Image 1 (cartoon, helix red, strand yellow):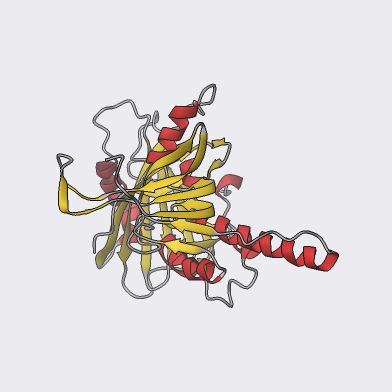
Image 2 (tube, one colour; image 1 turned 90 degrees about the vertical axis):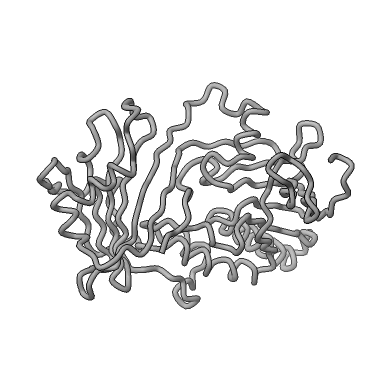
Length: 343
């Protein structure tokens, strides 16, 4: 299949994956280019030629794979878009109530103070799905190409230099046979390729292996998270309520914890994160999540009319980079959704 003729596209900077970091990175790059050219025009300096920036996304539309609820530090958004409120950024609520507690099998012991790493004062509860669907058009208006339904299948190299990506072929059977509907993927060439494809991304994994980027580094630490969004009776949810828990139902040798976020429209985001270095092979994050929801303190908060959404995600923490290639956020750390929503 190497002799197949493929469509090609040449850009200056290519972001792989339309998550929050890639969209913010593309927008910030465009802003910096504009700022540089304005300064060059004022001082008689050299302007940058037209820089082509593209973001490709495997989903059908920008934001379709974003299902995470989150507590977001608003300062980066304020730096990126000082007028984010006027632009209608879909934040749920500023954090109004914080609760950090240790759970035993039957009781909840509230911490008298909120530890600094869990202090969310001044932050906002957000739906990442809503935020990305809003941010996409804002980025596109800044002259950045957003290309959905373009899953990157492999990296393109010139020697040891990354020069772009090849998108996946369509119309190939389970046994590798070419169907009548076959359509070859396109080659997208870029001077700089930025990988923002998420935790344990396929391209990032191959890049790390090819250049031994993890040699001498601490091994990646992964965690699995399971969450649901529940619709409660009207008036039961306090928007901006944030609870984090330690202890039950996790054993003492497994790190992780639970969370509850109060959102608009009487929705409650409930989840449990379980470290994947657990020793018991029978550990099941889904079962532990059910036990978490049945705890008296959690059941009291989440007594609901119906489950609105359920999802799973995984996370890791680390960073990596290579000449002409950059890996950011989920490709190096943070969180990526792993399962679609279920109404």
